Length: 247
Image (cartoon, rainbow, N blue to C red; front, side, top):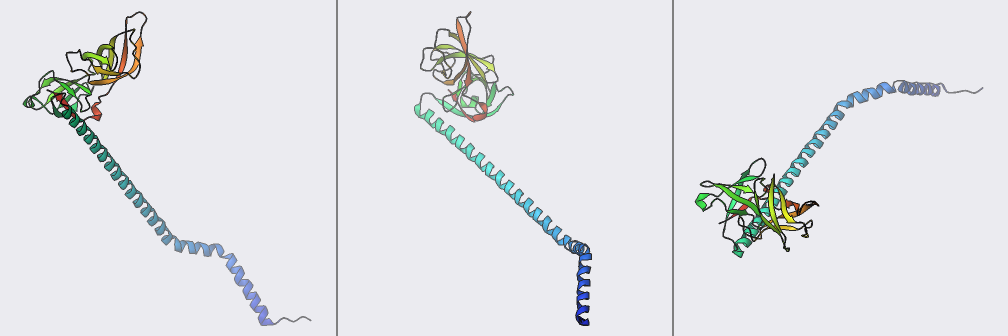
């Protein structure tokens, strides 16, 4: 008959009971472990979140600083360009001018206020241009140290104009809010999109050959003897700071 040592049998029974107990209470043991470790784990997660948030805020601040630096560099570049144009204008000696700054504009942007007035020799009727010889407008009101300029796009303003490189003449009429119309152009004249409009050398309000704008759209009517064109002005209040008054 097969005999089995009692001690070994007892050891096997105890081992089986231990394994069974572990399996039976495995969920409770895991639950206890998680409850004990949840605090430190939570702290680690939260700390990681705070570190990540702090890193994002720092990156955002650095991005904003870089944008500000780019904007400042662009502003400096724009000012340098204006001063280079001013230098060329002075060098050419085509006009005697005095420099001025834009102080503000009205809502419709048909008038601007500049930083030169009677004490600088400014008078009503004087033409105002940019350093690149782009027409801005005309002085309409003068104070001691400031002046008001009516812009070329003012709806009550008009002046003689011509197409660069062509014997095409007409009347530039302001349409309000910076818009211009090149009107009273004979229909048979070859006016095309992209033509450059200048002040006319035969005009009485402004000196000739100042840059005005480019032809954007052309309108012809069979029953009329003239054609007109919508002009895209070259001067924009938002993109300029330094202007020049032709004395």
